[in-house]
Image (cartoon, rainbow, N blue to C red):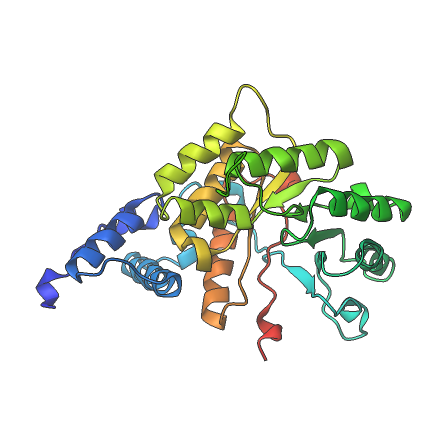
Length: 317
């Protein structure tokens, strides 16, 4: 490829993270005569492009991509809140004497009996007695349960008096297809999760559902946005139980993650949690950059903000 054939981009537009990056990626792929890119390559190119754009304007990356920054945060020296992770089969990890202190713990559940999962949650809450920095516990079921199994877990959790104290549970229910078909439905998934919330009082977060939606729409944000808004802004049924969007840039793309975070915070008044997929150090760093930029947005409220899932680097060894 002749270097003169590489398309140019507008630095300011690119750093807005509002569609220009996706448009440039398409033009770049056309110039390279590529039909598609695997997600890891695409996210790597996005990292390189926004890093290059920030260097051009000589502004730190987090500040460069935070267009709607809250002015009051410019003078604050705050650290990015990160949640700890208790993985499956490792429920006692958080109680080790040398373990790191986190503001929130995420417990992986859905792999044992309902009672065992509930006890793992109770153990995480119990750590609050000795760790004054720990103020929240959430869980991640990875769509492990059908409705009956989910109710058994909640019953077990309520017997321990911890159910309604959870920040949220990520994707508690198995995939829900459109009626009478084998086609997954975002609307039906959220509807079932709302039923879960109304019955249990425990809030949920969307994770795999956003990744599935992106794949369904071939990672076209405008199409994704239309379907999300049709569900979240429906006059027939308001969404009450969704606490946050869990955003994985390695799967969704950097720009799409930022646009979803903006939508969540600004339009739906819910949280945006950036999370890794056990990424490399570089991937984790950029996920943290996006999380910091999103947290500095004027639309980020303390009431709907949660620590981010970028504490997985020590698990790569």
